[in-house]
Image (cartoon, rainbow, N blue to C red; front, side, top):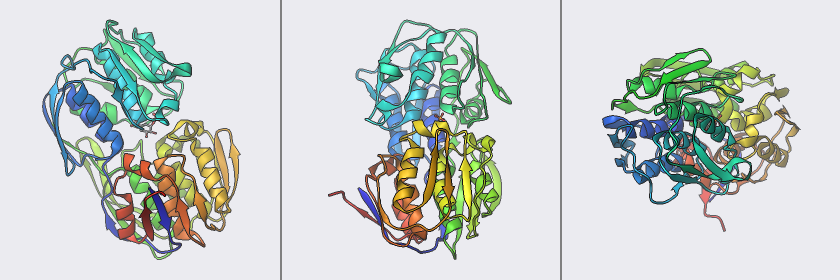
Length: 435
Ligand code: S3P
């Protein structure tokens, strides 16, 4: 699938974007190992979260749906998961692989975790190391790449783990494994990362201490089924927040967006650039803060992005680079080496696409320098990365000519109806079958 975009337009109207990916994954995982039946609403029916559903079905959990965002999970408790009879295929989903590896190792199952070509290139040593320290036996391909073969018969003991990088996936993997471990498991992170795991464990009644950079829990307690309403994903909303900010005449309201403080880097950074963003109707649902977000066009200026914002906006940088390309002056990002190990090397793939459109950039080991200017036209490679595809679709609002974005199928991993919502709000986007 490819996107063809005509230049120009403005973003006007209202929308509710797809459900939060991180929370959707966790809702299935925690409900599966809880006692009782959990009802989920607003679930993201994207390929990544569906890979998590398939994995738990393969481990013997009855899951009804998703049906229009509703899912019913019949939990089997911490000791009810079954050994899967075939490798668990995580598709493109790093979250599935890293969190489920903690669950499989903790539950003491024999399982192979695999994925698509992109996932099989991503580093898993970051979860293999702490799990091995806890007592698990895991084999992988060279340099800790998937598939991962996790062996049964190795009970875990709790550890006090200091994360070498700011990663919610690694933190969550260790805490999840800790549910089955003997004694106490603690994590310490170098910078705050998304805390959906900590919040949702509390929601399922599991005792967890969470303060500052530390989270700790003891193995052997029980998760109790609860109802979950998944907010709209701020990472999906981000595309339209940037769209409305860069396209003159825009006025957009996005409903029911998750604004967990560990996820709002995109709002903070856009505001520093001069964006006009209002949070309306702020409320808390199921332990997660939510708001409607109104964004109107504003002239953006280049900034030095504060490093403490990096983990809070980690998935939003591709589209923030588009904002920077449309801003007046220079934007500098540093301290973002994690971008190099996402679904693609996002510094390299964005720099290449921006260069195609005639934007001046300088690539750094841990970031990028972008000089705002005029966007031309051209054909963009996405390197099979959903967020690269959607970012360049948004860039068309300020381009001088047509933009063609190749390899857009992975958009379905996180935001299946992106093109329909984009069209409804004013983007001149056509979806084409690849020749
Ligand atoms: C996620 C954590 C982040 C993020 C990913 C989802 C999660 O990954 O990029 O899209 O749900 O925990 P890292 O932990 O690798 O930073």
